[in-house]
Length: 78
Image (cartoon, rainbow, N blue to C red; front, side, top):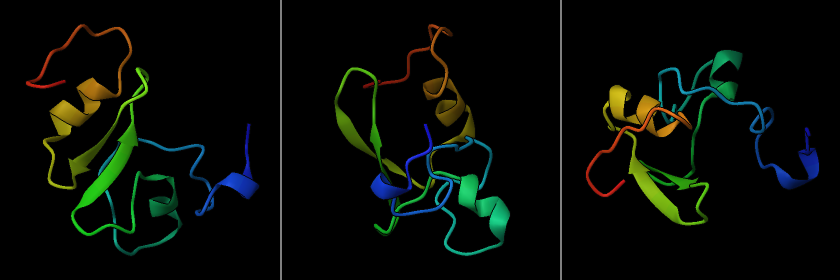
């Protein structure tokens, strides 16, 4: 559902992995991007329950692979 009460940002419950990752400014298109108030990183909650910071400079292919549920990709500690 769409929960404004739990969200510090508008549209954060409907986001996309399209670049830019962690935009600092911009128009309404950036409202649907993963972002954080932390400098250089975005805190992400994974489906197994662990939380990890991802660099805003993460390779887009790795980010896309992390965002799929059935691709069977493996990348380092992921």
